[in-house]
Amino acid sequence: MSIPSERAERNLYWKRNLLICLFGSFTTLVAMTLMLPFLPLYVQQLGVQGQANIAQWSGIAYGATFLTAGLVAPLWGRLGDRYGRKPMLIRASLGMALTMGLMGCATTLWQLVGLRLVAGLAGGYSSGATIMVASQAPRNRSTWALGLLSSGVMAGNLAGPLIGGFVPPLIGIRMTFLGAGCLIFIAFLATALLIRETPQSARVEAHTKNGWRDIPNKRLVLTMLGTGVLLMVANMSIEPIVTLYIRTLNTTPTQVTFIAALVMSAAALGSIVSASSVGRLADRVGYHTVITGALTISGLLLVPQAFVTTGSQLIGLRFLMGLSLGGLLPCLTAVIRHNVPDHRVGSIMGAAISAQYAGQVAEPLLGGFIGGQIGMRAVFLGTSILLVLGATGNWFVLRLPPQKH
Image 1 (tube, rainbow, N blue to C red):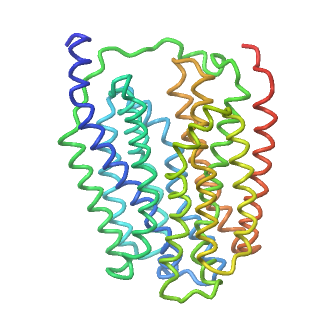
Image 2: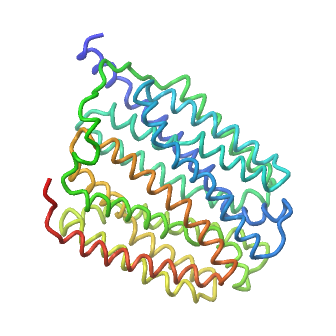
């Protein structure tokens, strides 16, 4: 097949592929986050006793998926380059469907943690979908297509905790897992039967040996990778303990999981609302101003969260925090893109994804440990200090002159 005809065929199918990738990304993110409101309760059902132990094991179980996902993300990226994106999407959707269903059948804590580890090995649908959409969408529509896909990912993060808050009381925790597995299986069928990927006519092997030497401003890129970790810290720090924290606010026992779901979804909703506006603001006033401002405001908003007296107060503060963080990830991506050569963008963005996974692994573990051993308020205050320090570091680095190549 000639290059022009291959490009024409690719353009013919890109909209359908986008819709399927959007649905698959949404369903897998729902499945990964729906357990947040009831995970401490499920851990307790599996035999863990004591608030400290429940908090710690909830953090371990939740972070396990992101640990293995971060470790294998570069591998799946390389295999996708070699064998195509569609096989990677099929693998991810089928693997997630099976592991989610099996989580509902777990009878011991170790089975649950093991399945969460396997889910991370099998996952990666949304990152694979992003690469497929970026490579197939026409140049003049690629930003819109990736923005739509990103909205699906954020919507999945928003809907997951909400579903996890009101479905388990109706059908039970185990059936909730099985239902999520069935939903992802539908995405697997759509991916396998409807996505069309044209074979790559050539692969670029050049420039692969120089690595970091190709990047002029290594200091800036490394700072953005670290800031990506901080973004995950800001979003994830309280999630392993939020259900237990809601319990301490004199909440009606039957409403604990529902209010916890609203708390977890509030930040995602705030990010969806503000993302495009903050992005336009960054174009006007500069990325460095938005990045340092977003980290500072979010850090300050964490302080009153440690002293709320009602669930509604926590919901409101998390929504405001989501508003402040909404445009941060696009800003980080833009800074990396503008400071990395074209032939290194894919590998560096893969490193950025791995860095974010590292934050998703470390912070639930750390949050669960600190919440259990020191106190739940310490989680909010400690995260606040980290974000303010991150803002200070970004302020200095973003104002330094570029490094010599």
